[in-house]
Image (tube, rainbow, N blue to C red; front, side):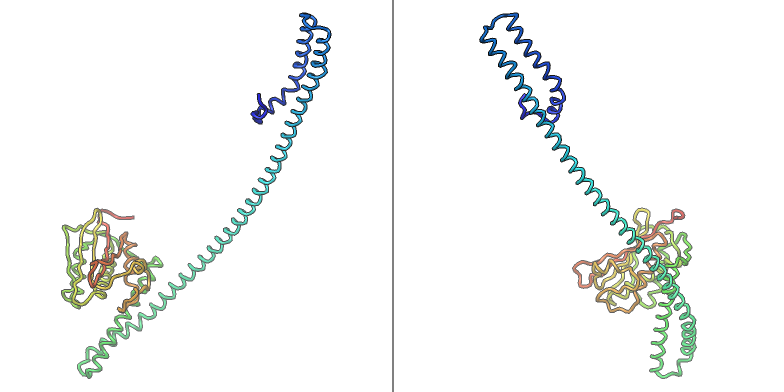
Length: 358
């Protein structure tokens, strides 16, 4: 077997058995020679001398020398391998120790950050609670004087025939602004109660078809002929709170009227999709950008480029109320691609009243 082709395992096996193989090998060599010399008698005196020199003086020592050199090389290679393995183990242990220390430091840092975030969250929750309490307190305190102001304005309006035209106009403006402020206070109070979990909902079967017709009739007193109601098929009752669903529908319809050109109708489509009833409110008007669509239902958000008056609470309150009633609202814009007034469609999805929802 060629030494260059021996594997590390072959060399270890050979080195292990070589001390046991070498003496029998030399003994066999001597026995063979003695057999040739004494039993077969085929050698002469000179040949016998030469053979003895070759066998006992050369072959034996050379064999032992080669075997010892080979074993020395194997022992050196094994020592070098053990040294290399020891150095590699030390390097690995050092790397493991460094990485373990790094991971422990990172874990401590993450733990500290988590604790800090928890503290900040607790502070934010406390601030949010204080904000809600403050808003509710201020709104509640504003309600009483606003009620007194509205009552006084009504008394003045009952006897307004004696006032000059300029006073009439001023009185109308004051009444309009007082009503707006009263609506804002009521919205803020409702939002505060909803966020605090104090807004009580009474869920039950509601005829959304009849409710929409009532809302349209109510708004038609101020915007006659502006809202067109379309109904596809038989619409079953939905599971909702009658009072707050009516408020949501009014908010969405008023929002559509506000941003639609005065001569363009608002299309309200009532339909059914699987186990839900859908209400689509489509208006022509400015397109709502994708960036604004993502924030349209956030509190106090006002879309870019819109100059209509408002506080940014109507759609936020509508979404929160619908969430509490297991319903949804979303917006799609443009509703009329390529048109001068591309507009938008607000879609309300309500569950059909098949039983109480958790």
